[in-house]
Length: 620
Image 1: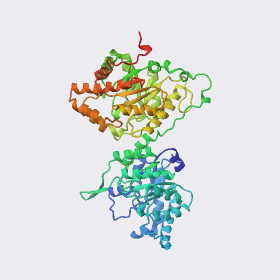
Image 2: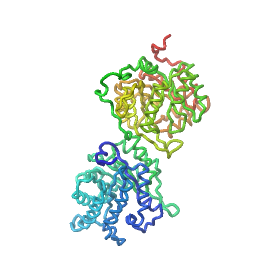
Image 3: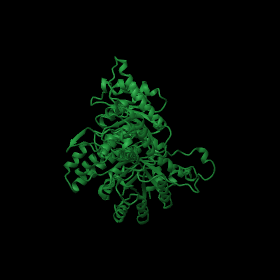
Image 4: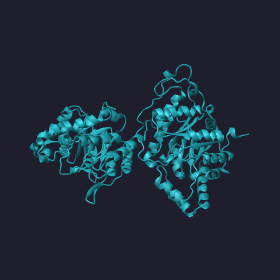
């Protein structure tokens, strides 16, 4: 990982660690102690905090030196030990980080009050910060971070002083109140501009009110043209039974980190009240939205020169029956859920009923909503053998690293499974084992490129394969995404990476689907619209409120409420799905049905009597 922190920020987002003081306090250090001095008296405790954050996924470890300057240490009679405390703090972080993380020297305010009208008041600030920063650089810190500054004047003095010490990466983050203003009432835009002009390589905000407000502040700082770092508190502290607690959950914290990265923030971490669990969620979310940890490039044309390119030159229609159907007209697939245990009988019987009703293809999800189920590869083989129906296997990036993904793909191909739907996969926190590792070596774009390379007979390492694969590969899309332009731009990247068809998330709103199709502007590959026949009002409310990516209009939910329960409610859900299908039969190239609770008869009922476009392969 090591190299230039600034270069890494330019390539992909970076995860900083969380609070130091919160963990030391929680592990028995009273607040009347000087926490910086613990670098000397309790290095074991400080080292353990660093180890916990590194294990949680932090890519930058902040030293335990926030108050290690002469002005603040003097209150404890420690002003003569600045260099000893700082050197020990950097050494502890570096011992833990190794080559797996960067070490940033943490520098907080001096506690002195600067007076713009009295230049002499600024000199003690300069001297205190210069001494601390020089000790950090001499000890080998990779970067310096000025954090939790409220006074723009003190921050300006600090930046000008430290910038004179060298060209090391220098970050500067300020505190903002609920009105999104610093001390002296600078807006996020004004503060970012000031920090950049005074020499900061990275600008941002930390501490304050919590992830929601600081997320907004961070996005407003983007206009300065510098990478933005956001390190919120875990909300506001509350006193509970004599203890000061921060109430923001790791999941909520991670969700806001994901939104920040999606909005352009380049670095995220935590401040007061955050723990390794918060950072673990941040790291997982960042991997999910920022691309996989491993980047897969397309194969250059010169690598492909010569014989043996195989399926790279074979038309889509010749790779599989599904590929042929995609090229000839309208396609229908129905999702068959893998069982949660070892008995596939219900899935096999459902697939058999679907085939008898004329359905040719079934989708098999890969651990949907991060639940533990039979592998889609295994069920796909069973359905082909027992039913003779063609499965479309979902492949997620969540659970397997690059080696595991490639191995499973080669195995699937050898078993005759050619049709793949590539998805990133819901993070583990949503499912049965929230503490399980979410891998994300690759994102969906990277996995599509990998499969494309395998189709050309080239492994990710660049080594030629004895025989190429012949997969048909598609991707997912979310018509109801809150940021539709970003979703469409991402979809175009997937198609550029080799996606040959698109299957959407379930659609419940005519206007949402039409807006999505209008925004695609000639995507160039078939689009299959997702439909989920609602089973009840309760089912609709759960999907709307609890499942990421699902948005069901109030009018549709009211229709389900009015339908009551049982068969009447299911019939209403079928009617809603049929209405959507009829509205877009001529605008999409297929339907992808997701019957709830393994009620495959609902999918058959939606399709029954629909004037589906006839493809040549359907004609006797």
